[in-house]
Length: 112
Length: 115
Image (cartoon, each protein chain N blue to C red):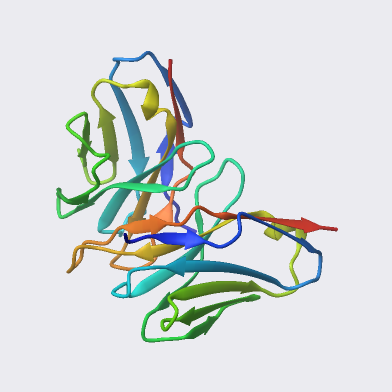
């Protein structure tokens, strides 16, 4: 069964450093998403991406965040200068259309 | 304001019993709802979805009910098993129109199944 994969599973970084979280969506999906989940809280939408551009983003997704689909398989989330409050689980998801979104296992980001 | 929320944060049931997890939403324009299951250390896993033109949908051991009049959604799990223990989230598919869809999640209900 096809699945969304994410690397790394855990990323530890110093405050102010740049991090890149990587995702490989399901191969025939057209829509890609990033969500985050701060420990003990609900999952929050960050950004959606379609046709090589951002289609929607939340207020969390400020200028420190960017997404990219550098090739036909990867989808990345970059945080330019991490803050302590960026510590969370980051989930990538993908969907074929406006329907079921398949989530990856997540990357745990810890900012020290 | 617009929100998707859950009535109860925790639910404890005996193995074999039926479980009912509830969710309220406030945006009457929402047209697609999903239930996700999240086990510890894993990403949300799709369980079942329902569109606003339906009031009931059944899957394997699960049923989702949608009451648009009171903006209420429920997930029923029949013959609950220990493997059903997880956090359950309702999510509202709320996009800006066209093909832009994002999920707005509720807080989650922790379901514990006692053997």
